[in-house]
Image (cartoon, rainbow, N blue to C red):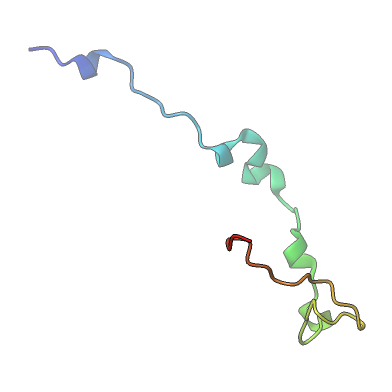
Length: 68
């Protein structure tokens, strides 16, 4: 009996979305990411979007799943 699998070329799966040639690490040599540029000592000890210099940047929480 002849094996059909041996006669066919090997199946090559399509590349995943993150294996694009543009995203290869050799092209990003020497690249500094934004999270590597942040000086942690310069960040505030705590941060609250409800009080930024007296301004609340949040909206009230609403339950939109209860019928009116």
